[in-house]
Length: 282
Image (cartoon, rainbow, N blue to C red; front, top):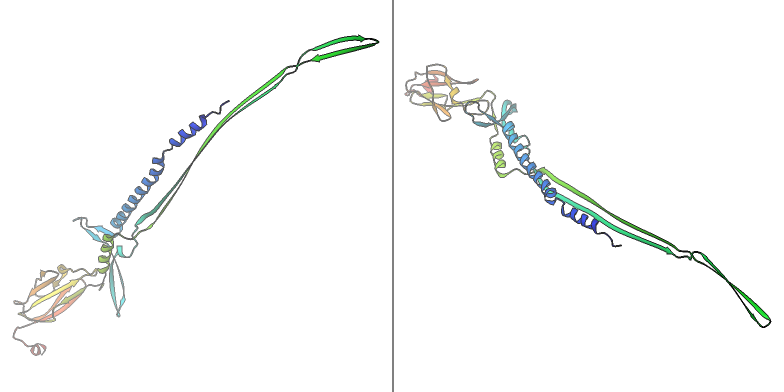
């Protein structure tokens, strides 16, 4: 009896039917999708945590953290961009290991067993005699036979299929892209220490009527705010000039005036153009 090759054919077909493209391409696509999701998470974090949007203009500004501390015997305020003091999530996939094993076994066996025995069935008996001279001989014959025949045939076929796949993905905090690193460097350089009440400065505390008053003001966030500068007395109106304000003193009467911005005040004196410093002091 010939051994069946059906299990072998079945196993071969099973091996050819394994979806290698899906089994290997599926994990790779999942890693690519995960990397894209990680990049979007980084962008969302910067948008939601590190930036604020002006509701009127739609302009985006960096969120600053401000707190006060003692420095040189006086209270100062530190303004630092939030993105420079918190870790920005930037997860990147470093390696992908895909180990795949297909185990297919097939076997076929055929067993044929023939047992045959023959036995004469029945019996035969014969008697014969002969006399020779004074002697006489007798002979008796017996015979029997039997017939028996046994046969056995066995056939066995089996196969098994096993798939095993191990996937290892290694990811971690990656280095910042060059553009983001440059942005954080610029934000770090913008770190500034300011006065919680703001800083108001003028070009001189004593000015002549031929001079101009130049004043600058930084608010508690460390930003120039020229619109906040006003002259308390005299009806003088400062004119904006870049980050500063300018007051032409030509038509201003001599006297002491107060410049104010926020919580800060600075006094300055206006004297006649022909008056010397000593005369003004007297």
